[in-house]
Amino acid sequence: MKQERIYWLCQAAGWSLYTLATISLSAAFGFYSWKNFASQALGCSIGLILTHLFRIYVKRHGWLRLSLPSLAPRIIAASVFGAIVWMMLMLPLLIFVFGAFTFSQTEPAIVFVQVFNWSATLFIWSLIYFGFHFVENYKKNEVEKWKLEAAVKEAELRALKSQMNPHFIFNCLNNLRGLIIEDPERAQTVVTQLASILRYSLQAGDTETVTLEEELQTVSDYLALEAV
Image (cartoon, rainbow, N blue to C red):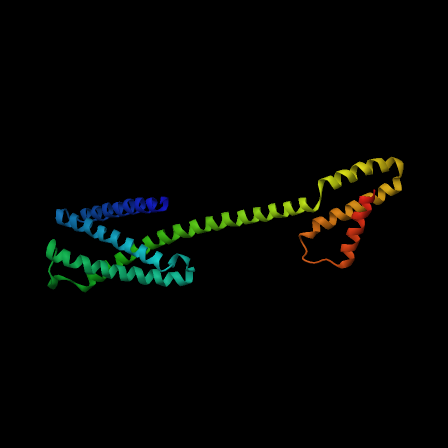
């Protein structure tokens, strides 16, 4: 809903500015008649409608999921086609409604130039529209990537916590404190066994399989510490 509101705000603002620009350009060349201004405004309104219909077509046919090499020729073709439709709609209005000229006065060069200008307009609109969505998708992908990495780290941390029982380590350290005074040699053995178990737990998430010898050695160290 928020994106839809932003879209319509951008459409209204963009085409309003485009209308003012075309009217100002006409006035700069000395075309001050109300018919000229009205035709410019009507032409921009048709452009708004065409771009909206183009957006519906794009969303319906999944153009936003296409790669840039696949999308570029489609955008160019759609811009040219849209400009031709734009001209087909405007030409009868200019002749019969606004009386700008007659069919006999219609020069192919002028029509070609106008189609080219409108093609460029639609192409620029497409660049803005698809560029906005590409940026939005990039941001979403980055957020999803960071969320996934955070979830993986959290899962690794939970797995590590589940492998190293806090009570077991607490008891080992308490017993180690007593052995340092009573039996220093055995205390060294306990430190070695505890370090071996911790190393095994830390490396468990990085390897899919371990040798039977490593597994048996870890179990042996664990049972020896339990015995202490």
